[in-house]
Every structure is written in C-alpha cells, then in structure tokens.
Image (cartoon, rainbow, N blue to C red; front, side):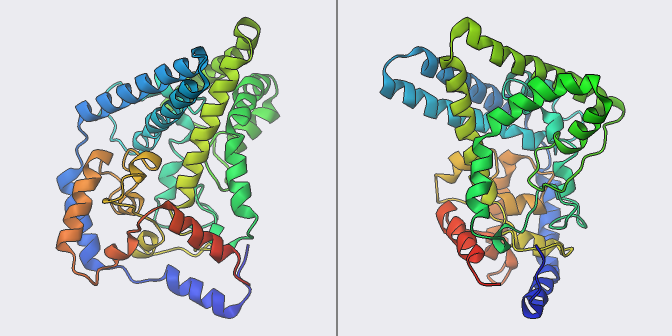
Length: 355
C-alpha cells in the first residue's frame, strides 16, 4: 500500500525521521553493558519446565475422557508450549557459545515437534533489527497493518489459525518433493522457510555451518510431519486433532501478540532508532496477563529494540531502571501501554480511517 495523500505522506516521513533521543540511547547502551550476560540456569530451567508441562498437559488432553478436565489440560498445554516456543526469539540473539547445547535441546524438544525449527527464524529476525531495514519493504517482520484495509486484521489472524496444516504441508510434502525437484527446492527455500509476515520477503539459500544445521533440522521436522500423518492409522484421529487444535491456538495467541508488538504505522521509510522504538510496544507491569500472552520478555518488545542483546530475564530490571532514571519528557515513557485490547482497538480504528 502507498500513501497518495500528500498530507498523510508528509506525516509519515515526519514520524520516520523523529530525531534520536541521545539520553535514552546512552542509557540503553549503558544497560546493554550491564545486563548482557545470559544466565544458563534460568534459560535451562524455564525451557525444560515449560516443555515438560506443555507436552504432559497435551497427553492429558488426549488421554482424559472428562471434557472439562481435557479442555483445562489443553489450555495449560497451549500456554506452556507457547512459552517454550517463544525461546526461538532468544536463540536469534544469544551470543555464540553463551549457552552450549541450548539450540540443539530447543529444537529437539520444541522446534521439531512443533515443526518450527530454529532455522525458520535464525537469520530472519535479525534483519528486522537492522537500522536500515526496519519498517521497510526489506523487513521480513513488518507490514503497515495500521494503514491497510479493515479486512486485513481478521485475515491476519485466520491465516495464523491454519499454521499446523501449513507446516505439515511444508515439511511433510514440500520437503520430500523439493529434494527431487530443484526448481521447487529453490522456491521452498526462498518463500516457505521463514517465520515472517511480509509476503514479499525472499530468503537466500543457507551456507556453511548454518546450511548443515538447516538440513538436520528440516529432516527432523519432515520426519515428524510424516509421523503425525501416519499416527492416524495407529492411534486414530483424536491425538492429531488435539495436537493441531493446541498448536493452532498457540499460533493465534502469538499472532495477536505480534499484532500489538508494534503500531505498524510505517510505510517503507527508513526510521531513526527512536522512531523505531516509538513504533514498538512495551506492556510492562502492573498488568499480569501480558506474562501469559507475551512471555519470555516479549512484553518488553520496544525495549528489546533498544537492547537486542540483553537476555529476556534482565529486561524487567532494565525497564525499571530506565523508568527511574529518564525524565518525564523522555520518549521512553511513550512506548509503554496497558494491555492488548486497547492496542488492537487502536490498530482497528486506524484501518477504518479514510485514506
């Protein structure tokens, strides 16, 4: 979509060119130095506990006949697996060697069984953080959703609900076929190998060590997708349908979280760091629900754009310190919001505005 109204276009350029706030960026740099070390105990305990609860509760949802208890198990499973899956975001930012074995373990117990191996996000998400890419047509994780048509938001959610079907097709059908058809392989790598929301994004073929990791992870996800389909013949439809329902609900929650992670008001103009921050969203305490729908530090998404190398468990402390030290006029305070519903409403109203 392109803004044709010259007044709107001028306003868009003004938003993108908001001058950088020196005090905020200096404070962010100081916090990066103070909080950049990941705590292995926190990472491992959080991941393993989330995965154990998630898969255990899914087993309960499949095996228990009491409908109310089975639904409760499914809800617990969805929230726990959503938290475990959210560590894919941390994998893209963890320094090499900081958490030995963590990437392998995450893929083994979460990424492959959910058919979202880490290669789908690594090398993609970091482009979203590049100063000259954010909010532009080259950003894999950005669309001007607030400037699009009203029907675009329901479609954004509906597409997410179909994720389990799409992933089974991606890994159970396209992966094996693409090994036999080179032209299809090139298309699969470029267009169907990234957890992105920009339909115009095209991915380059992997190289070196990353190519070997990609191949191993894709093979694991492909075998798991085929096993899912084959499970129907051994165990009937219930296990597969419960798995897909929980996976779909998890993906919808994440898509709603994505919908409020930014204001989505940029339409291709390169933005200053402060403008990027103001186009992003923190949902800090005292609210408690964001801990469920924006876990593993995702409730501090705007702050994360200032401190991309700071581990999730330190973001709360960094936020509190910035709130305490920056004056009331700092743009940092304008990046904090109370919850999901007001943000969804803001974006929805923006899509209904005449352009």
